[in-house]
Image (cartoon, rainbow over all chains, first blue to last red; front, side, top):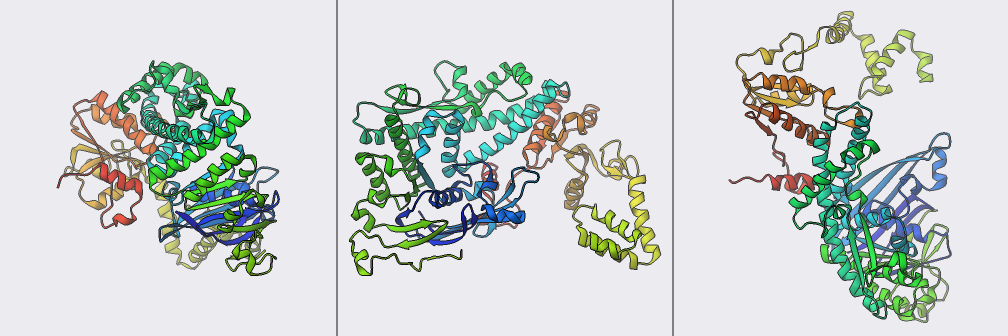
Amino acid sequence: MYLGQLSLSNFRNYRRLDLELPAGASIFWGENAQGKTNLLEAVYLLATTRSPRTTNDAEFVRWDAMEDGIAATRIIGRAYRGRVATQIEIALMARGGEDGQLPKAAKRLRVNGIPRRATEMIGNLLAVLFTSQDIDLLTGPPAGRRRYLDLTLSQIDHAYLRALQRYQRVMQQRNMLLRRIGEGRATPEQLASWNEELILQGSAITTARAQAVTELSIGAAQVHRTLSDQREQMSIRYTPQLAEERRGGLPESVEELRQLYRTAIVRRQAKEIAAGVSLVGPHRDDLVFELSGRSAGAYGSRAQQRTVALALRLAEAAFLRERSGEEPVLLLDDILSELDQRRRAAVLDAVLATQQSLITTAELDRFTPAFLAGAAVFDVAAGTLRRVTPTGGTAAGDQGSDAAETAPAVSQSP
Amino acid sequence: MAERGAIAAAPVEKLIDEFNKLPGIGPKSAQRLAYHVLRTPPDDARALAQAILDVKERIIFCSVCQNITDEDPCSICASTARDHAAICVVEEPLDILALERTRSFKGVYHVLHGVISPLNGITEDDIKVAELLGRVRAGGVTEVILAMNPTLEGDVTLMTLERRIHRDAPAVRVTRLARGLSTGSDLEYADEMTLTRALEGRQPV
């Protein structure tokens, strides 16, 4: 699949952008802070409805558009699956926060013009985002790794996304009830129904995560072998909190898993009431990235960690392809400059193997002339784009003057 | 509201403000309603005022089913034509109107006046659960139909009621409404969740 069109209004530093994107590789070239990353973020938002960078949607709104106190931000994409196009749209209405508070935004999603829920929007565009911060997945807190699993799985498993949404809602309700019980305004007996719902959704989440990590681990190990000198074996290990409850890890059947969950909840009831929050469940899960059985996050060198993160992203692309039967769009955010020859080659191989890639860079000379000749190159400066012909001595470059020319495919009204 | 304040007399202003408090009525609609009342014959205006007062002063809760009524017990609970062995439990009085329109339910009702939602400060003690259990325990009931809305809070309320009824009166049959496609709708336009439920609840033909 690929994204054929992208329109932005009042998104971050873009006032208005209407961009036609070809299949294949597109390179967004420009200095720092010109809007390259924002473009990829917009595409990632269309795919997942969530940003890799922030959880506050109001941040998307172009800063000076907020001056009137109210602003509308819109991201519209046209995703092609074969010849079938689907229009996906995210609209944000943001209101300026009063008295120095952060602005608040309400998000509306549409598919082919019809208002839809996130569960119905996600999956129309699949994307894998590679960034130089991917290394944080290994070294950062567990929340980042859970978020990674959630974003990846949600794209191809709607039942997972629904379970996740429902689980979060159950947690909010249940935590409030725990607090009320602690204050003597409710009885522990009232937890029963919330527990059942928590166990139901939690078990579904744990099962789906375990399966996905197994697949990702196999894929990542394979990729890792081609990226490294094969002295180490990479693996990804899912460490659900529930596995601590039982020797030998998670049980095989969902029924046993629910029973394990139930036992764990009952055992910690007093603690949960004292804490006023739910202490058992997938919101406490974690992942460990290992090199020959040792945690790469804790013991790996910077270079080793980078390779593991890269292997993970490449395995993620294969995972999405495998599960959905569709080619995901690869979003490479300025990652080529930090890679050596061999790893760069592996990434560019993946780019050639997929239907569409959107690549940001500050330096065009990171690419071979042959690669540039087959790519569409866009110059990004201060929130405006123009398509340029690369001056690489290619056939296309020889035709006119070397000066950049504006292609009709791009139009904007600054 | 400043421009309007300059042109409307105080009593009109007051009426506009009162209409504006109603759900679904914005400032513009409130103005339109107020000026409409201004033009209506005094009798009509008095009838409207009286109707509003009656609702507040004469409407009570039925001591059996907790529905709103002007006589206790309400007409459904007092009816000998209805099957008092089957109780249909709903969240709000409006749900009864919807079910009655079907003309296919001949039993009686029980209104909870809400669903369990700790976030809104509502536990099972804040809705009419004890009253329902009292009716079930009193005997003569063979089936309780739980007709909650298909939301998380509705589901949790349903589960809680099921457990409570089962504990207090194990012989009583507890059922829930089917979930799935609405009649006359198009498969193509059904949302995923509904379709999944419909598949799960498929039946032999």
